[in-house]
Image 1 (tube, one colour):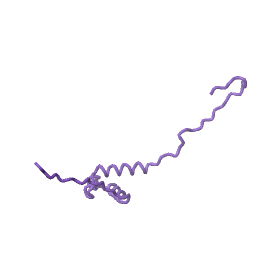
Image 2 (tube, rainbow, N blue to C red):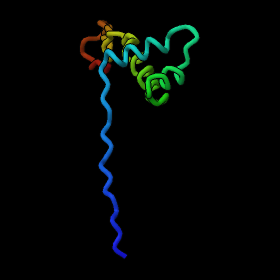
Image 3 (cartoon, one colour):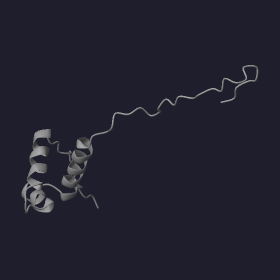
Image 4 (cartoon, rainbow, N blue to C red):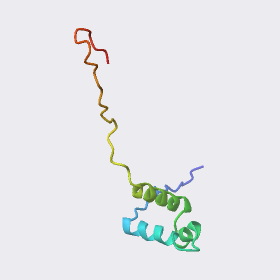
Length: 87
């Protein structure tokens, strides 16, 4: 009953450079290219390439540089100065 069970080493995640990701995204944007085809040709999962494309699109979308609150000028009636002003 003594069986030798091989110990599997954990699979390490691959890391890709920004230049490689940009190359893959550019290849997907070519006319007639499919994301699945580009991913398969480069040994990648199509879901990973879709995620890279989404992140690149989100980063390229300009975010308007506006404050969260805008000042609003309020006018105070000047007719009665003895009454408290509630704004």
